[in-house]
Image (cartoon, rainbow, N blue to C red; front, side, top):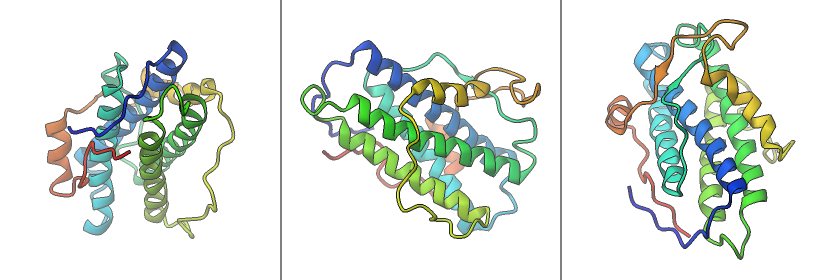
Amino acid sequence: MSLVLRDQGALDQAALHILMDLITAEKIETTMYAEGLASGVLSSLSPHDLAYFQSGATQEFFHWQFLASLGADIPNKTFFFPANAFTDLHTYLTTLLALEETGIEAYSAAIRIMCDPIERPGLTIPLAQVLATESEHRVLIRDVLDLNPANDLCIERVTTTDFGVFEARLAPFLGPNQFNGTSTAGFPFPDQATVLSLADGNACVNPGIFIV
């Protein structure tokens, strides 16, 4: 992984807490993309649509890798999902869409809170770059769901900067049976080789490159 990033400045405890929330979202999303590809729940999609998810898996993985390079990570290595998330396509897509929408809003809030132009001048653009890719994911998932128009927003929603709200949305994915008392068995966070194998030639083209 290659990074082009100016000195982001020391991260205080509040910033590290936010960073770990973003990492949580990225690890959950990476795991869901990877298991979606491995499980066959996406097998009915055309190769054109399937490529969205193959590239998406690599994008989420490298988003995590970038965030972890800033000096934080979470200990969680296993994640849980609604019980039929990997057998029912609609459940899979709507769950993933909700995760993407949470991530978009969380990155918007993080930029507002974390990106002091004096203390951390090099952090704003990389976080905004990740946010932009997450917004692409939202539209592509809406396209596969036949939601028309897929690109329905003039600007992305930002309803809160309270990371407690985002943590509450992500919490069910961190332990068993948090979705109306049920869940899948735990799925492991995939390694890079697994993600690239699942991408089957459709990996993102500039993994880990952040130009500032």
